Length: 118
Image (cartoon, rainbow, N blue to C red; front, side, top):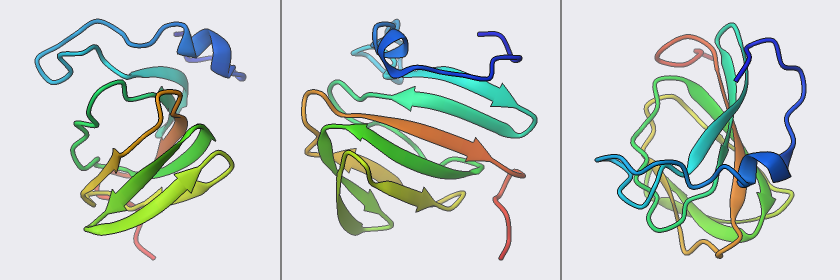
């Protein structure tokens, strides 16, 4: 992916998922980087088996694009569907469960390691 991109589209990125399997993602990596600039990066995330995410070092936003799921953030469950947006602070434990087969979300990471302080 070129760092100079200014636009990302859902369909072509979904066609790249899942990516190659790895130790962490035995069913194939469920994300692909779409855009990046400075500390900001945008990924498309479409889990295909289990969400094996671990807490991230940066703050993040999830923009749910299609399907539905449950997003649990620090043991609090939130239902989510297309059109919803969620904030997850750096270091917070979070995971999608009960996701539909077509579930996909944009993830935006930004800011310093450890997150921004309010």
